[in-house]
Length: 182
View 1 (spheres, rainbow, N blue to C red):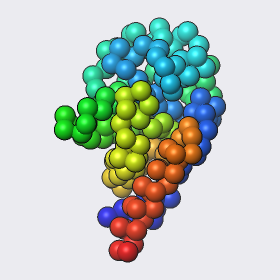
View 2 (tube, rainbow, N blue to C red):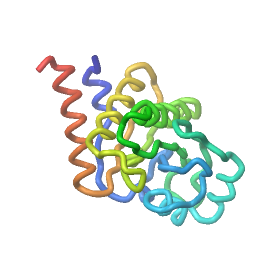
View 3 (cartoon, rainbow, N blue to C red):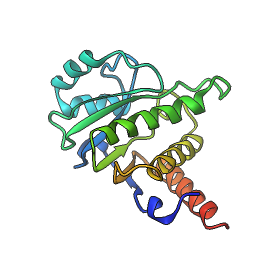
View 4 (spheres, rainbow, N blue to C red):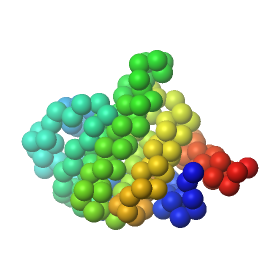
């Protein structure tokens, strides 16, 4: 059961994750931690070439795990690179791998005592994970972690587009209904 105090530590924002002034943003990374498309490419472009060099030093990163680097030219002090799964229809452990990517990022935030952390919708772009399913996994995984941990103090789900924001808001509302016994 997730109480109101935990739910109050999570919120949905719509916009460009590279512009957020938070302790860390999460990059939806590939296993090589190389610059890619989508949110990964945007983060690398905004952070500058130093990010790619720092990523090479901590790569590779298996699916379901995360690594941390400085944020360089970003407003965020750090980038946590989390590798989510490619969607193969849901029968190849994708749900658990996605939850593991979120947990791994959260554990790094806890270890570094980061106050604020912003996640994109990991694996929902080119990796093809269905947005509503990914949003439910993200929200539940974060809520379970925050129920036990002090850090991060606040988690933002930074959604690029209304469809993704709506799915995350719906997942938060579902969590609230379950907690309130409705």
